[in-house]
Image (cartoon, rainbow, N blue to C red; front, side, top):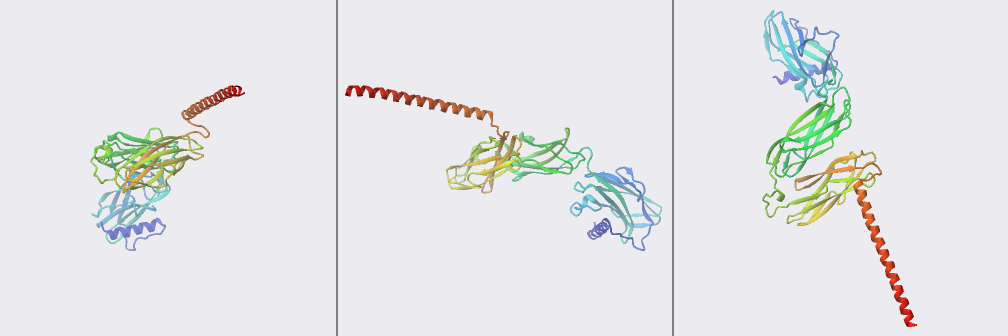
Length: 429
């Protein structure tokens, strides 16, 4: 298609959508015109009537135009465009379509099919559908039709805007990636909750997270989910499924591909060169977080190589419900053959909901990184975990018994020493 012609047409449509009247040339003829318009199989009647066509965001529009002519015409094209869309320059193929050139003899009719798509990101409001008939050297006819763009009514109300794995779509077997998913409610009703399920069916791994409220027009991001890939996973490409369930029975799914490479860690039994630096991580993945005092998650970083190694640590997934601090800061240096402990202290916000909250700690070095999945179980304000309280009471009781025994022994020794002194004193005198 002629790029120059497209540019001119786009400029004309833009001017029309901005309210600038574009008149046909004085020598333009009316011998070629659109006789009727069907959209998605329904005839729309004459142009210029008072009826507006209601269409939904994301809906495809199949246009069929009937053209007639009173004289021979050549090199004719028909174009259609949804005007006034903010991102037209990025999604031009959705809001604009044009036919091939054709010739038409006097008295003949021709049907022309075009296809448009109402962009999902367009604002629900009134917009115009512009249709133009033009030949090589002149604009023959220009029409417009009123569209009432609304949100989706039933089905497909929730849209998955973004779904990706971090830090990349490649992972070594035995390591983990975090999944981030952002959704938008483009429907006409609020939803009490929306549940995200991320899974790799072929490897039988999955993770779940829920958003409590998803209102009309809202964009929400789920808490990051951690997917740990098995050490024995075979190298290759695997399908990742992101499924968001809402409104009891409705759901939307998006898929992607993750590449799994062979595990090169000593824990997998793979060969490791003598000079390679190997890192091993040991951590406690779940803790009870008291609403007042918080909890500490220990991480042991072991460098089994023959040279020191620097590690960068980062905590993610805590900001929405609490705060986290690293005992050694974000940079830790571990000498060759040594093990260094790092402590992640997590404190819940005052308004943090009681229950399980997932987060992760990323340990990175020399371009490689491990994502450690963590889980904090936040208790109600002022309460403590029953098992922890029981242990504390048991320890307190043991300490009390020991103290009582020591006091008894001291008293006994004192009495015994006192009687011995009395006997000595009597003998002396």
